[in-house]
Image: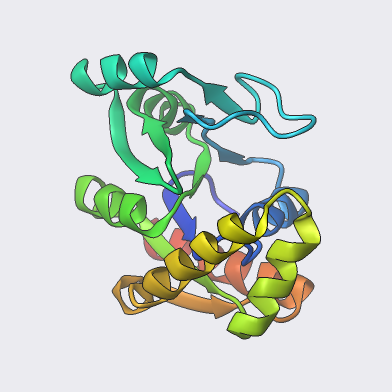
Length: 189
């Protein structure tokens, strides 16, 4: 695939956004992801500056005040954001940038970068989404209920995306999204 461009992957928690990204990266190592900032605590094995920039609430607020984010949201009680410096650094290198972010952040990115291609990843069903979230094992019942309520709201945004892909078979989902990226890349040459 030719290099360049910004692609947004989003959808409800548990739909497989990060797994899809890893599959895309396996197909094309020149596909890169920005490292997002968050106020949530690291999960087991996550590293600062690699998986996320883990910030305190006051640090995050200061970066908002300094205009360092292209988008930021509060989700499930934590703040998440994409740093302008990360997007610029990677696009300046001619990389194909994939932003894995939640729906409101995606719509903000789309407003700031109208050329960005937004792809909504849907679960095959809400029951499957619950199963996937439970399988993670890092959420209690209250957190699962909160995530499901958020997921239902997020699903209402899917028509605002350039493309929608159902993740009922991971390999097919990855191939479909990669084909979308190739098509979009070809159209912008």
